[in-house]
Length: 156
Length: 156
Image (cartoon, rainbow over all chains, first blue to last red; front, side, top):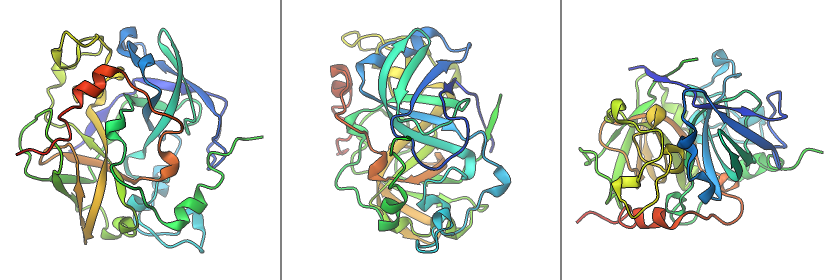
């Protein structure tokens, strides 16, 4: 079974190269592809947050490791499989990130804190409903908190 | 640009038909496809919640409405575009839902509260990090809360 996906828009921002950290404060705008009608965005300004589903188009597919390995090659962290980490070199190369909605103008929306580089194809935009946030307390391993230490730090 | 996606697993549960509501308490198990190594799941049990990315394989693509319409054809709710709602008839037919992790056994994981029917192709599994949850207060329109009223109610 092969599923065909078509971009519905793309990202424009100042991030030109793949980097792991310092995404905090990044402002991106997402522009609809020509095939999408402008009113597909109607009502989006009634939400504070959106989930952006996008395609890691610059990742080298031949480098994807499925089995267990040390995240970021850090030997102080345990070896985990691809589905126990969020790295971008993964099967199907799909990223999902919750961003802050800033504004919409016609066929463009502005968002804060999207960890995707300039030119990234967007494959869906979903509004965040509180009812879809985690039910109960979220727990995660210690290494993942260490990994995230500078992820949302602002670049200086 | 056309992106090719391949299922990494599939859903098994008691939900055989597409229905909008009463997903609460649903227990599903996700089974890896043969191409995925068992240790792609290594370490997944150190998380409380997972994000499941899946494909709405039973939705009729010819029925997708991109422009604004009343959600669930309810005329008391405003007309909104496809990217201001979370309905399954959407471009690229991708669903993303945060579930509670229950357990793993070999190539299978058990999860609670996945709103996907039996046989649904899974295209990615990502662990939930608190650092990826919404920053700041989440707000959403009144109609969306009304729509969600029975979504997570348990079926009796």
